[in-house]
Length: 75
Image 1 (cartoon, rainbow, N blue to C red):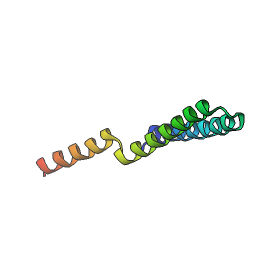
Image 2: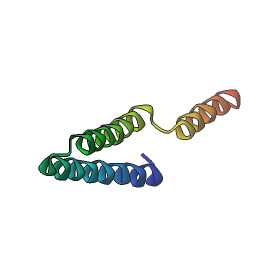
Image 3: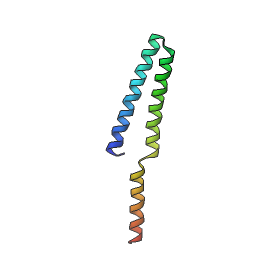
Image 4: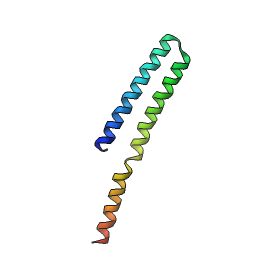
C-alpha cells in the first residue's frame, strides 16, 4: 500500500469513527433520521476502505505487469 493510499485509508477510518459518534449522539437524542444517515455514512466509509484494500492500486499492479513484460521481451 502506497503512502497516499495509507493516508486515504486513515482518513476514511477517521470519517467512519466520526460517523459512529454522530450515530451515538443521534440515538441519544432520539433522532432516528439522523441516526440512520450517520449509520449509512459509517457503512459507506467502511465499505470504501474494504474495496480499496481488495482492489489494490491499479497503477502499481499495472507497472509491475509492464515491467515483467519488458523484461521478458529483452531477456
